[in-house]
Image (cartoon, rainbow, N blue to C red):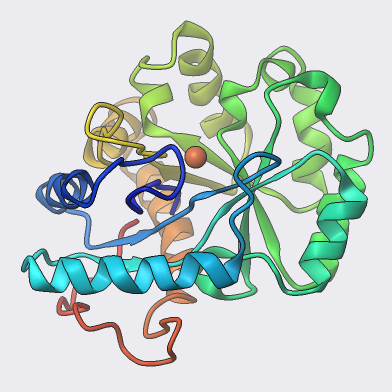
Length: 256
Ligand SMILES: [Fe+2]
């Protein structure tokens, strides 16, 4: 539910071949469905009307290449200015997860100075619109990992937390690894994602779920999977054109 797989769109794969290689890797990992989440921030400001045709094109290429993977539209929306965010949100410009209003992937800037003072109020505002904000990889933001009560203020207002597999595996360094493990225990509403960008930064999901099973047990792993199922349930059967996607040819329930 957090993956940069669209070719030549953001800082993800630089070619269609690389996108297809990522797709094949994900399928081999057991993944059947992905939400593409290209960046929407101050420098790469991808909006719904731009993202959806890219997703349609990639699904057609996957079908042609006989790769059994379905990609849904979405985006990783970074907020530095709450007023601007709420304006674009209200205008329907953003591509939420699955192009449905139920969940949106929300990112904060790496720089503490650009973290909005009214972030908790924003989370409440998003919830009041009927949307659940899923916070992108807070275990990688030092101002959260050094101040978990700050993150608590967002979760207490109804945000979910997305932990990245590469953090748990230590690929983002020791602090995100420790913090990622902590978030899995600190909060209930947690989802796991790859935040894959290319073939180098593409760990799949199975290693992440294996890590959770080993450290926190099968029940917690199942619970986190169930949270992803909720997100994907709003995508299932829905495409940008309103028709069934051409390559949704698996009966197994989506992973991410
Ligand atoms: Fe991302």
